[in-house]
Length: 136
Image 1 (cartoon, one colour):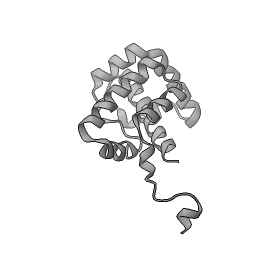
Image 2 (cartoon, helix red, strand yellow):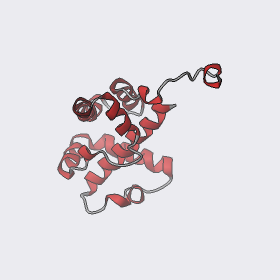
Image 3 (cartoon, rainbow, N blue to C red):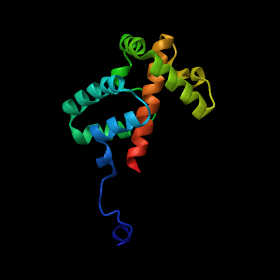
Image 4 (spheres, rainbow, N blue to C red):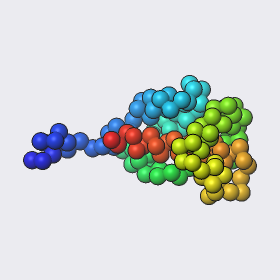
């Protein structure tokens, strides 16, 4: 009864986690088309491999962890080299938002190249934030 009064019904909040909604959020936070597409290609492969429901649960459960596909140091370095301006911009934004240096935010990403750490930091933070936004 309460669900119907407040309009909740039996809607699954994970239904908002769609590739289109994720892409829209990437643009909203300032990712350019090329960088957003780079991320979307990887997410699309994952949804095709595991299916929509499992993808939604996985995306919702990122919880500030680096998606497996982006743990590849060489891939992360290549992304940095192609999108360094955007990555540096996002790193500065994260430092402002958290009032912590990027090094402190990426402490758990040690033993890899600095450029790769920055890419992984940006991707894990922004995708996790998008997951939270889409559940509201």
